[in-house]
Length: 250
Ligand code: PXP
Image (cartoon, rainbow, N blue to C red; front, side):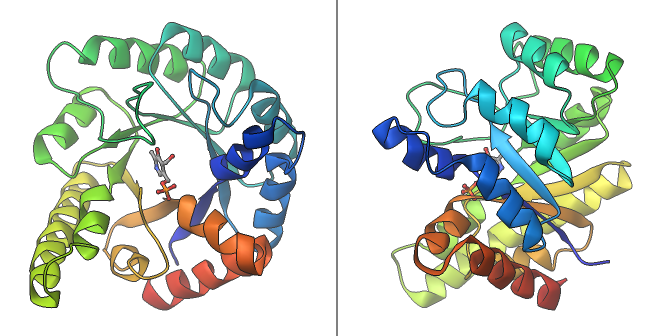
């Protein structure tokens, strides 16, 4: 089976919020993405509500036909939101107000684990599967298993940055091959530990094929590159172009 595409539509909301208008509406965007063949829709309801709003998630819950994946921080307020909305999946992510986008994976070792553990407990009890956004690191994978989640999303940011390294092509190849290998090993280990494995962050039309080809990776979450292309070619075409690459690679 081919890898699944979940489109992150946060940046449709970013354009809307730049002017405080009611358009472009991420709810419309989600429908167009699904009509073009996307398997699911991902939104990050940030604590500062800088792009996606509560109203968006509430409407998306009613309109999305595929999987609705809600990304959020592991805070009591966000857990209450998720319990009310009941998305198909919650992906817990680290969140810092000053960051431009999610910078790293969750830290599942040490003190930070308590909040994540509590959020997983409440969401799981309500029947909402939880995914943890983590670096492709064996220690984080093992911690995820101990937290008894069914799935993880591997952070592809380091691989994507390596593909853009300003050095020579040889350096770029060496660095990005090493990062790709880390992702492949993490996916293999995740599957062997019984986890469903997704991946995402920073993926674009040039770097996505190699990640889509990693055995064991079931789903990709892609936002910025796709919405950026949609500005020029439309959302339908942007999704179909991405799906064509994924289908050829996986
Ligand atoms: N996965 C997670 C957990 C994210 O936080 C993000 C960014 O919101 C993405 C995937 C999508 O990243 P990008 O917008 O770079 O495709």
